[in-house]
View 1 (spheres, rainbow, N blue to C red):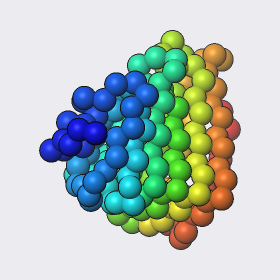
View 2 (cartoon, rainbow, N blue to C red; view 1 turned 180 degrees about the vertical axis):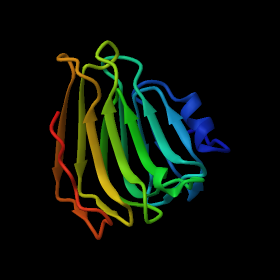
View 3 (tube, helix red, strand yellow; view 1 turned 90 degrees about the vertical axis):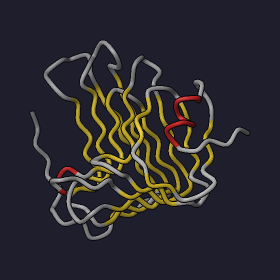
Length: 171
């Protein structure tokens, strides 16, 4: 495959369905707006700003997969906002990853904010571990639109000492 100077360059060049494989540890925050897989190859991906990976869906079939490595939440002026992965209107799959934070913030934030763009979202987590954050996973359907839904599947994963007790707030 083609070698790129940055992960952002590789994402920009990627086409729908492509897999990007990391060849080394990286410190960079990246926005993804297409269907791709990021194979960490056993390496560590550390965010350089508030969010390490921002996956923003642009259509009904938007999907991002991250697998086989370590993801560290980005740093933030307010560490309470540090997030490892934020998926909005996109299906998100996390496989065989160790996801860690800065001691506060949220490790994975998945939400659907537009029924027109992506009315039904799926978050799938398998074989992964989450540690060192206030919240492990935040999954929400924003607003009061009946056409929105979210499915969350978590298997063979661990959530180690998170700082806050999970809360459920029905609408």
